[in-house]
Image (cartoon, rainbow, N blue to C red):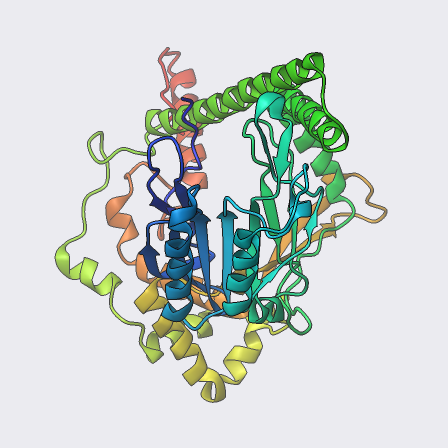
Length: 458
């Protein structure tokens, strides 16, 4: 058995329905920066998660299922789905391996409509679910002798109110490099909403930077990525051929070899990424970024100072921070300069303090709040090369205000916790002091005709 990582980092959360021997098992994982888990229920055949979108507060439920392979357990499966339907009154999406088909044309050998098929259709109607058309091929699984048996036992079912929230819900099959099941992608097509106020503008000159990044990516990951893509294309080619005709033994062997190549390159890519992460972490500690003390390091703040850092924001504190910033700077995506907030403070202060209170209580804000306009400003007339431009980031006023308030709090204690030799980004210290001290030291040694060694800590 090959174990593979689903991802790393503190933003990945997951829930699972354990497998029963060699069959079953469902895992649901999500990014907690995008979705907030409101509830989870694990049954015999399913795992259901109730989510709330962090950005707009929209609540919905998703259920991952693995249907029973034995006929005598199917009614128990239908009852479990009915219980989930009555648990939450939210838009609902059900997806997974149902281990059954709705119509005879959903398997290669055809046949007559059975009672199990009719019952499956009845349950879908009773639960007010909609079976979306499948794009990319009529079947989702193949098995049996030389994988000649094919059927559609995997699918997504959604309620109509789910489709009302998204523009156009579509499900389609993807290439299957390893499994005997085709992965299914459910694409919501974006959220139905009015004009989008926040846009990320890319200037044409940034294409030059894109070329440089592509070159770096090719040198580091290129060969692995290309080989993985080629192997996946081969697997996809043989899967498409199998949908049209029965593959020969040589062709089945070629597909098996392509799957093996794909797995090899995926494992190699994961190994490279882990090496990069571990190497970066080791380099961070080596350079002193992870030091906790010693070597002339900074001290510690006391309990009272720590408590002040976590106090609720006051109106006087926020207005003081707002008054200290230059209001004539270019506006961000919200099209409101800081001078607007300064001039209209008496009118908008309740909404602003409400936003800061929510941030203080929950430690997060709407993702679009720090959306940024990235703009290139020419340094000279007739600028053509990327080096002839100066990039600036235009951030919204509320985000600037929050950053200023937090910076003012940290400014009071940061001098106590950073190393005394650090001169940058600390009030009362200048970044040029380090260069001046080094220059004076070298000049003094040269004048005295002395030799020595300088240690530079970066």
